[in-house]
Length: 101
Ligand code: FES
Image (tube, rainbow, N blue to C red; front, side, top):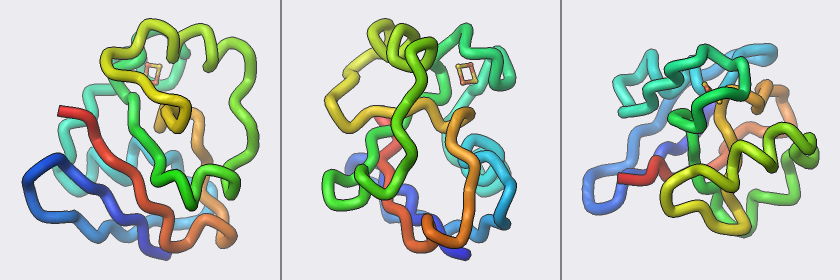
């Protein structure tokens, strides 16, 4: 399945992901600047991505712990998510996200 990573200004990266994989890992494997310092423990927000508005509703809602951490993310918008909390499934094929600069 394909995931489109946008980076303000730079070319989009079309990444291959597998069901069950975390979006954070897919981005890291393709060289995107997603630090993921806490490795998915909801303690850093360095895995922040902004989902395209048209795709946002395809994701299951964020848990409260994720929402709390997103409050601390730099440049967060209403379409922000933590990529460590997004587990890929076939329904997310073609998902488009922006990695904030
Ligand atoms: Fe730290 Fe996602 S990797 S919150």
